[in-house]
Amino acid sequence: MPAIVFRFNQYLRLNSQILAPAFSGGGLLILALLGISIADGGTAQARDAQARDSRVGVVGTPIVGRASVIDGDTLEVQGERIRLFGIDAPETRQLCEDQSGKPYRCGQRAAFALSDKVGARPVSCQPTGKDRYDRIVARCSLAGEDLQAWMVRNGHALAFGRYSQDYRSHEYEARNRRVGIWTGNFEAPWEWRRRGRT
Figure 1 (spheres, rainbow, N blue to C red):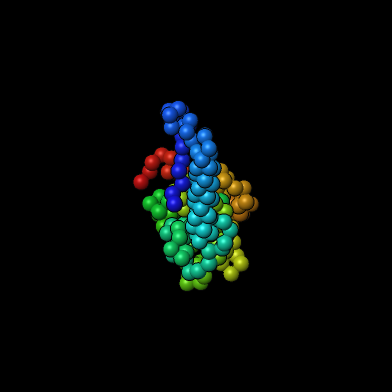
Figure 2 (figure 1 turned 90 degrees about the vertical axis):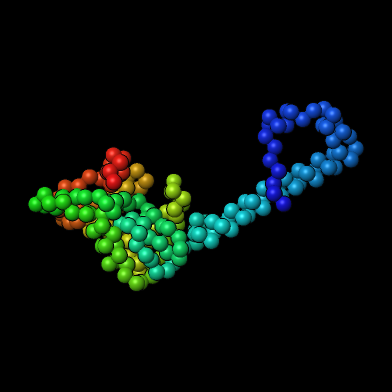
């Protein structure tokens, strides 16, 4: 049974001819039963949402399986798109410059690096929430190794400080070792997106 939702302005429009009989005798019983029905409908909706969220891991159930790499910070596991928590990799079409100033597709390189790392082995992703595109955001690991840390430490992604400081030390390490995108020049992925580069 769908829940019935009354908005306050709809309530005010009820005229006294309808409202007055409701409060007399059996009308109170009807209102009480209606209230129980509304409350139960809301509870049923909450249960449905929780069941749906638990199926996709938002409530905390790990998502485990073979992963397909979508880009340098997004995987697909068991049919679910998963955004890697706390990191931001260059976009697929984004260009960076190597140490000689020659442009290369650093976003593609990040995706290939992640794909090579994961291979056909199962990953385990612990959901932390959802992003604005309704993708699951999760901390993913491969045989116990933190994939986000690996991507940042090897210069394939940046610590996404807007959402987490967890990978800052890995970013400093990559910058000091001058690996990955740190070998040349690049624009932070969030800046590249903000400028609408395509």
